[in-house]
Image 1: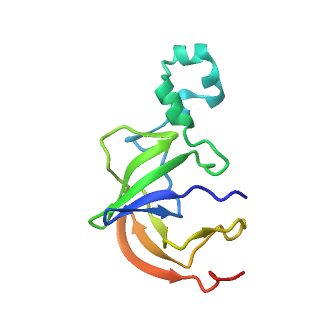
Image 2: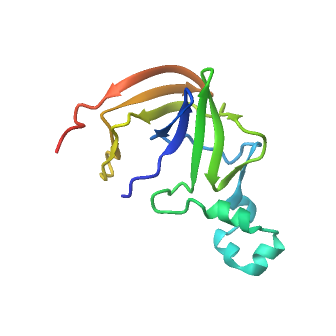
Amino acid sequence: MTAQTPEKIIINGREQSLYSQPIIPSNCEAIDDLEEILGDPRAIFDAEYKKQFNITDELYTKLHSVESTCCWRQYIGTWQITNSRLYLVKVEGKFLIKQSAPLFADWFSGDLLVADEHCRAYFNESEGWICSSHKCIHVKNGIITTTDIRKNPEFNRD
């Protein structure tokens, strides 16, 4: 399995890699799923289809900007924590934020895993990314509830 491109998160003004992937809901009024709007993405290669549905080169490029085996979800989100709240700041790929960003992520509840700077890829399907430690940020309905540091005792293994 190919290691997946991480999301991004801004904490205290510093952009870091986010190794968990908060789901971007397709039913959110403030976010458009470009694949749903445009239909079959393969049809976008057809010039007549692009003309009929007014698909600009810019929109086409945005939709396909992160297509890769290292990004199966077809988007990379940039998130931010401000005043103990989680916001979606930017999305590259198949989603489009319709209103002005940042967008309060009240739909998200779960854990955010932010790796330390000593993270390395480990291409094992069951383990994914291996880091010496990571910060686990617990979120409920977009509100940060607690944060803890988790050490990985197996980080320096051969």
